[in-house]
Length: 199
Image (cartoon, rainbow, N blue to C red; front, side):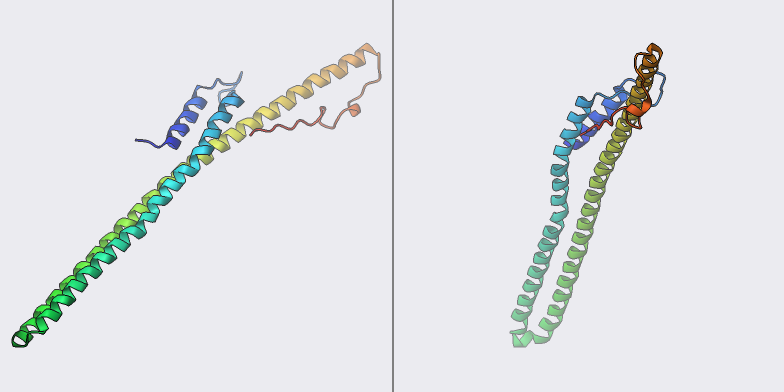
C-alpha cells in the first residue's frame, strides 16, 4: 500500500503527462496554475507527516536495543542466581563451579547474539527508512525544479510577446505622425516590469 505522498506525486506526474504541448513545441507544456498550485499545496501539507512517520520508525531502533539489553541482563541475572545456589552446597562445590561457568558463558554468548541481531535489524530498519524518505524528497525536488523551469519559460515568453506588441504600437503611432513617440518613453525592457508570484 503506497503512502499518501506517493499518491500525490503520482497525481502530479499524471497531470504533467496529460498537459498539452505549447504550439510548435515538443518539450514545453501549458500548465494550469491553479491545478498545479493545488497539487503542490497538498504535497507540501503531507510531506511533514510522512517524514515524521519514518522518523518514528528510526526511533524504534532504541526500543529494539533496550529490549535486547533487558533480556540479556535478565538471562545473566538468572545464571548468576543459579551459580549462587550451586556453590552454596559444599558437597558439590566443584561440580557447581564448572556448571556455573558453563551456564554463565552460555548466557553471555546468547545475550551477545541477541544484541548483535537486534543491532543489525535496527540498523537495517533505519537505513531503509532513511533511503525511502530521501527518495520521496528527491521526487519532490525534481517536480519542483521542473515546475519552476516551466514557469520561468512561460514568463520569458510572455515578456517577449508584450515587447513585440509594444513595438507594433510604437511603430503605428509613428506612422500616424500624431505624436513624437520613442522607445525612451518606456522602461529599458519595453514594458513595465511584471512580477509573477508563482506560489
